[in-house]
Image (cartoon, rainbow, N blue to C red; front, side, top):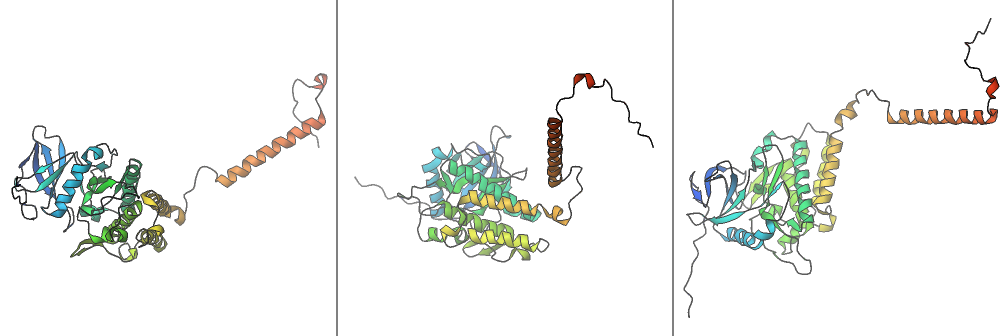
Length: 346
């Protein structure tokens, strides 16, 4: 028996969805700007058709190989992804096809909005803090057996409280190095975010994840370029973007970014965990500027002074004890009931 000839719809970018369009139980609201020109698709806000207080984000994918790859990955991992638990990681809960034939994914909940359009309002320390939050979320993902195989900046959001939110479409199971899988890219991540060993066909790893984080951090702190291959970070000194910041602090941060972006995996920080620790240490140094300029007076003695004071008390106590031992006990009959005041004459 011959199978009928089947043909898929031709590749196409998503057709803009009308507000109020039904996607299953969800109703489309306004589209969201994510600050990119080349990525996996278009984000929309949505609300539940029968309970408007229930919110969701909808990603309508391009109808091409990349969109198909995202859907295949979701279909393969949906059950496992649903068990991933972290308050700052959101994963799809449903999928479907629009009336125009474009696949879409539903991410339930209120997640804020994509980060890139919000950057102008953020200080350097706030941006580094968001990077720490991203690395800490990935620390938890690692403990649950996942890593960020592909980083697309459009998947990095910021909620209304200012906290980072990772829309976890680029997550993949940490592969067994003896049996690697998923060597291809499906989110359409720009080459700037893909580690050299991944571009050469290698599997995702904690080291390739650090490279992606380094590229994202470079763009977050130094600025972005729109290229024919997609978004790319500016590779320039941070002093150009942050002229008011202390040069020594910027140089320390640049050294950390350079290490994360090394072409050699063994020279990068050992996982997002190490990167988080180093970024947090940098924030601690950055936060001590007021102390460097001149510490405020404290009602408490400095630690060194307190330490010598206690040592003096201890020494005095030892001297008194030694004197009492040498003098021996005072006879009870000679012990006066009261101590008269001294009347030294002359």
